[in-house]
Amino acid sequence: MQLLMSMLPGSLRARLSAEQEVTLTDWRMAAEPAEPPTGDAARSQRAWDSVLADKVRSSLLATATQVEQARLFAAGTVESGAWLHALPSASLGTLLDPPTLRVAVALRVGAEVCQPHRCRCGSLADSLGHHALTCRLSAGRHPRHTALNDVIKRALQTVGLPSLLEPTGIDRGDGKRPDGLTLFPFTEGKSLVWDATCVNTYAASHLPATAAAAGAAARDAEERKMRKYSGLADRFQIQPVAIETSGVYGPATSRFISLLGGRLVSVTGDARESSWLRQRLALAVVRGNAASVLHSPFSSGPLKQATGETHLTDPAERHQLHVDPEWATTPDNTASRLEWILDDQVGVVTIDGEQPDNKTVFLVPMNGGIWTLCVSLSESQRRTLREEGFHHPMCTNYLSPELLSRGELRNDWIHRMQNLSISCALVSLILLVASALVGLFGVLQKQNSAVLITGFMYLMAAIFSTFSFSIIHFKRKTKRDCGVLDSQITHEFYNSRTFQPGWSLQIGWTGVTICLTASLSWILLARFMRYTPGSSLLSY
Image (cartoon, rainbow, N blue to C red; front, side):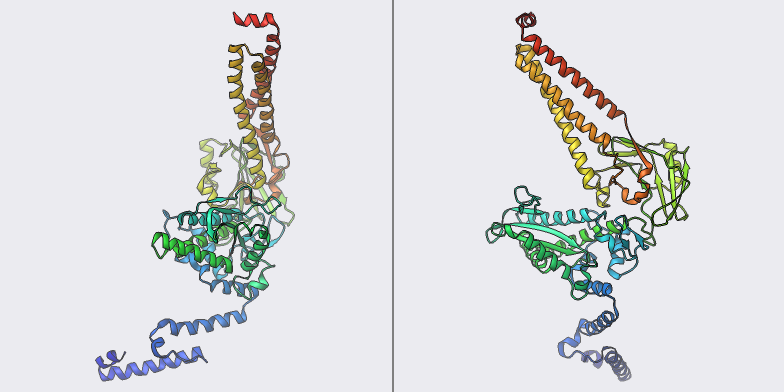
C-alpha cells in the first residue's frame, strides 16, 4: 500500500486517503462495536468480511423462527454445502438435473417448493417440503439410504477394505442387521460395522434441538445407533453414520468421514479425495431429498409442477378402467373431473378444475411382464396421447438407472411378492429339467424308483407353479399401492383400477395342467413297471 501511495501524484494520494477514511468509517458503522483488523489481518479480505457476515447472521438468527434457525445453523456447516463444490459432470455422476438442483437450492435457502396439501400418509405437508423428506411413503427415503451405503462401501473398497452390505449372521437378536461389514479389520483389530441413517433436520421431534445447534438430530441418531448395536461392540467396531437431510454430520460421523477421507488420500496420493468423498455423500442426500419432494402427491409451483401425470400398473397384468362419475370429490373436498379420450380407453382426471397441464392424472391401459410395462395403445393413439400432455415414456423398465435415480421404486410388499413368485417359478423350471433327466434314466435303465420319482417331481413342479401364478393372479385383490409411479396418484383413484391376466398367465396355467397330467402318467408307468410282464415289455 505504501509503495502504491508513493507512485501516485499528490492530488490522487490525497483523494485516495479521503476515500479510504470514508470507507473505514462506513465499515465501523456497519460492524459496530467490532474494531477493524490490524497488522497482517488487515491485508486479508476475509478478516474484513467475516465480521460483517457474523453480524448479519446474528441478526437473522435473532428474528428467525425455529425452522429458519435450524436451517441457518445447518447452512453454516462445511459439509452441508459440499454438493455446491462438486464439479457438475455427467460422466462422474455429479451432475444434478434441473428439478433436483431447484429443490436443493430451495431447501437450502428456505424457499417454497410446493403448495400446502394433505399427504397420502394423512399428515399436513407445508409449502417448504419438509414433511416429504422423511414421510414413510416418501419416494426418496430408500434410494437415499442405499446411495449413502454405496458411497461408503466404494470408499472402503478403494482403501483396500472389501465389505458386505446387510451381512448375514450378524444381528442384535431380533433379526435386524447393520447396513455393512468390512471383511478385514478397520481399527483396533476389529472389522467395521456401520449403519447409516438420514434424519430430518426439520422434523417436529428434532426441531427444538436443531434450532439450538447444528447436527443435534444427527448426534441423537448416532447415540440411538450405538445403543442399538451395543451387543456387537465386543466383536466389531461399531460406526453409526448419521447425516441430516440438511447435510449436517453427527460428531461420530464427522470423525469417521475424516478418517476414511485421510486413508483415501494416503492410498491415492490425491489431497482432494477427502473433499470428493464429502461431495458424493452430500449429492446422495440432495438427490434423495429432491426425489421425496418431487414425487410427493400434489406438489406444484415453479417447482409446483405436478409430477403425477401418469398411472402405471404392474407386470403380467392388463389394466382396464371403470370410473363412472364425471365429477368426484375426495375426502379432503378436492373436486376432480373425469374425461374419456381415445374411444374411452384413457381417462383424464383434472383436479380442482384446473387446466390439464397443471394438475392432471392420466389413467392409461397397460400391459407388461416381470421387468417391463408398456402402454397398451397403438402407435397413432400414443401420438394422440402425447399431444394431450402425456409425457411419460411409453415403456418402463423397473431396473433402469433412470427409474432408480428418480426414486420410483416399488414398495416392499410388491418386492416380496415378486421375489416369492420368481423363486417359485425358478424351482419349477429346475424340477422340470431334473425330472426329464431322471425320467429318461429310469426308462432306459428300467429303474422303477427313478420313474416314480419323476412323477413326483412333475407334481412338485405343478405345485410350485401354482404358487407362482396364484401370487400374480390374486395380489391385486387388496387394491393396495403398487409402488411403481403410484406416488403420482392419490389412493382415492385406486379403486378405478381393475386387473386381468394376460395370455402369458393363461399359458402358464396350461403348463400346470400338463405337469399334473405328466405326473399322473409317470406314476401309472411306475406301477406298471412293478409287474414282471410290464418290465419285460420294456426290454424289447
